[in-house]
Amino acid sequence: MEAIGKFLVIIDDTRNTYTRCDKPDRDSCSTYDMVKSGDYKKYMTFEMSGRGGFSKIGPDGDWAEAVSLGGMIVVSHGMCFRESALKM
Image (cartoon, rainbow, N blue to C red; front, side, top):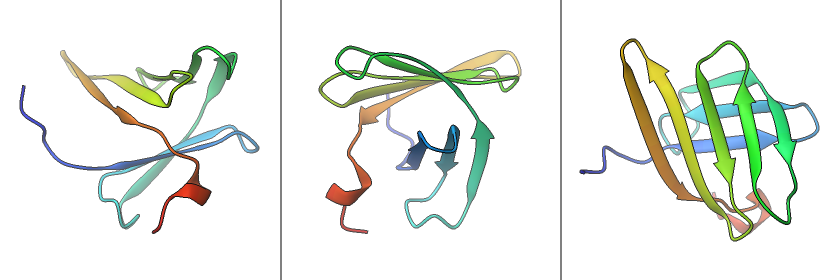
């Protein structure tokens, strides 16, 4: 499978929002309400209510997102970092 590009996901635990930016420079972002479940010491799951998508983060920062687009399921994966650790 070929990588289609880079994007940025911002999970805000305080506001319970999930923001996905198609470009890492945050120019084209969409923000959704989310419902979180799980334990940060294990796996956390974030569901974008009514959007046909969810995201899962593992204890080591591994990340996966699955979203339904029409009749397709698109799966993305990568690594998570706390924003304070990123140089943006």
